Length: 321
Image (cartoon, rainbow, N blue to C red):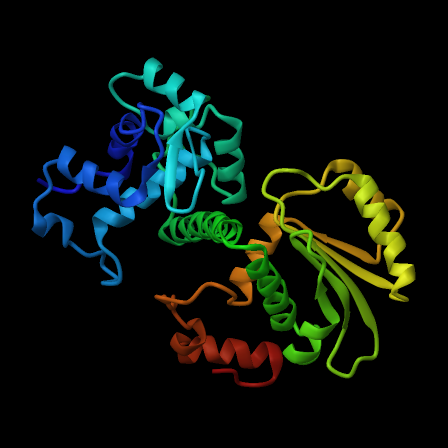
């Protein structure tokens, strides 16, 4: 049997969690393979890149979309469990679940907006007809942004799965990759452990140490950073004799905290979990390149004929070829 599209996997995968138990990722994958009667040659089929199996790739995308819609949560690393919303969706949709079902949930819509896609990959929304077909260049751009958004979510979840000490390593690596902190040894000494699942201290803004930046980091999974905590951070800048500060968290900042920094302290930068994941991807921290595509287009100047060249010469006084 051919490997089904990832949307076809959405309901069977959710139904496997209907018992409310915590399921291991590997066991879910094996159960889906049995459900769709996939033989060993099917399971061994590779993507065109040759780097990953097609079945595993589609199971992963089905899991990502289901989690973004709030149908499953991840109580522990490598495990999933159905939510109350997931149970309701199973009841309301006994035959089939696809992206047109997921798009009704604000969390999934937010995920699509972060990916800068106009509609779910199926091309349909609950509010209107399918979008016009995109050009190949547009399709590549949309796919790239969606892949980036999914990768950012996965990177952040991996950080949260790790101990607090690992988060401190991530912060150090990102700051150093961006050119802050001087050497790693010096940055590690200046950014000491606080014991509250975070990291704070003062680092150099550049390798010459011409200016200092106060850094505070909070590894929180759900609780948002409130305005009073940001105000306390601003007060700590004075005690550290630092004129600039960076506050990093794996969660998010409330609107009040963001508004306070915007209005009162423009020299303080707030980096939430999603922005941290974006920086990790941009600077190659915790990710690696597995395939590159180089797009080329026609060089119009190369194909300019003699008549066109004379026209160019007449306008500019210089022959451009």
